[in-house]
Image: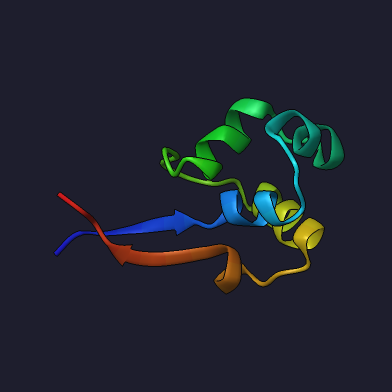
Length: 72
């Protein structure tokens, strides 16, 4: 029973009609990091980046990140 953290960044970006480079410029996080969060290919997230993302979108950590069962 493996658990993983899932980021819902992609849906928040779609709601605001933002692409990776626009969001990167707005919140000063590298495009590669944002791509990893949006595609859920990240292994860890920097606390500062998590705060920037949640603040920008006006959401809580629990709204941005979820813990789910890993799909094998």
